[in-house]
Amino acid sequence: KGESLTQAQGIAILGSSLVGSLAYTFSDSFWFSAVEAEVYAMSSLLMALLFWLGLRWEAAMDQPKGDRWLLLISFVVGMSFGVHILSLLVIPPIVFLYIYKNYKQLSLKQFIIANIVAVLFLAFTFKFLFPFTLRYFSAMELFFVNSIGLPFNSGSIIAALLMAGIFFYAIRYTRTKKMVGANTLILSVLFIIIGFSSWIMLPIRANANTTINENNPSSARELLAYYNREQYGDSNVFYDNYYSYTYKKEQDKRKPYKDDVLKYEKDYKTGKYIIVNKDTYKKYFPNYSDKHKGFIPRMVATSPTAIDHYKALTGIPKKSTRRPTFLENLHFMFSYQFGYMYGRYFMWNFVGRQNDEQGHLDIHNGNWMSGIPFIDKSFLGPQTNLPEEIKNNKGRNTYYFLPLILGLIGVFYQLKKDPNNFYVLLLFFAFTGLAIIFYTNPKPFEPRERDYAVVGSFYVFAIWIGLGISSIFESLKDKLNPKITAISVSLIGLLAVPAIMGFQNWDDHDRSNKYTAHLNAQAYLDSCDQDAILFTIGDNDTFPLWYLQEVEGYRTDIKAINTSLFATDWYIDQMKRKTYKADPIPSQLKHEDYKYGTLDVAYNMPIEQFK
Image (cartoon, rainbow, N blue to C red; front, top):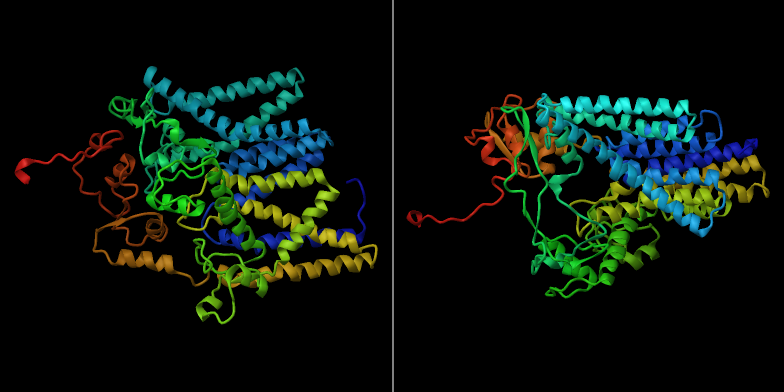
């Protein structure tokens, strides 16, 4: 900062950047996400963009108009929520960039307060600003339609105009009074909301009745339910029931039941929003006692298979019906969730991977391996004389610990040279790694490997890999010719880390000539008669069919019905409409017969004459 670079230093910086960026490019998890039609590659881009913008803001913070970078950060934060919430996890590191720019040294008390503030900024954005905005639009929509009698969506339009007026007045007032801090804060919130306005696409396409329209978020109220993921129920990562409550479902004696969320839908006959579960939402769910609740609950899944795995992993007797202890709960979190569901993925990317089979805590599949025989033997057994299908598995990639070692060199180098920015990266690493595991609370065993969710932390470690090159250059530049040292260290680093990773990972990340999903879906459709109805079960069955029909226009005469969604009223409504060339399903049921809260329970009532 403020110093001119020598040619050798410039070469070293460029070499470090190249090694670090290519290490991330060729890392197993990121490369996998980059070549599939998912949100995680775009989310990685937005995380990188936000962090880069944070660095630009930090550099220009003391300059005139330096806060324009903050406004751009705010806009990207809002816009990124239209892709994935992972991008929001860059907020705490950006907060610390600001803190360390203005306070070089922090006492322990100040450091703790700073961390709390950083988390509060994240919570404000994710848990308050976005849901409050949607609640505001929802309340205005309900008021102006149901109370005033205006047409549907008029309340949302009035809410937008009112919000624009409030922001205009607040910005003009703070500018007139020269309240720079308040003006910047208001502008930042405004730019977040402008970015978040990408969500308007959801009700627009829902009202267009597109063929694929999950949850049908066609109004402000339904969009709020969509945001809150109401269809998935409540979960609390800090205090909730363990699986053991299912053995004896004791309800709270003071309050044995709790209410459901009110569900609104449009009634085109009356021109109002009606509550479809008006008669059933009261005392809808059993409210279980706190006997089986605990802090930081990890073992919460209630399927018999998950419960068996919980017990096996923590040493609880299989026939035990007691509540897990707090230590057993922590043991599961550290050994399985943090160890197997994060540490293993981390080692895949920077040490090596055994194969591309999903692991279930066995030594044969899904483990990390280094390519160093005596180390791999100690963890996985002898690796000689293996069957050809195991030895030649395309996912068998080994890097000999080289990326990990170079990254650790970078970690200690930055810790010693620049501890403040080291903590910024450490916070970034923690929030995009272990914090995600903590928040998502993975159960044993997931339907697929979940390494794609924590690639943000691998991005941070790739930065440390780049800094490892800088560290080696700094240690050798005074002993050898600086320019030759910079070139040599950069070239050796390129060959030792990203080149090995690229060559090892190429064959199992090359998606060319892989048509299994396409051909399988085509075979499903070709097996059906003209105008048939094809029932599917879940995502993997359904999405390839949607692609063929929606994108390629193939066999659009067939009605594909996802049975996982068929229990919802909005999906039944959609199946009763013509899609592509396919006729509606032959149903005699009216919407009132299956709307939410109507057929939630099926009673067994035997009829005597049919016995």
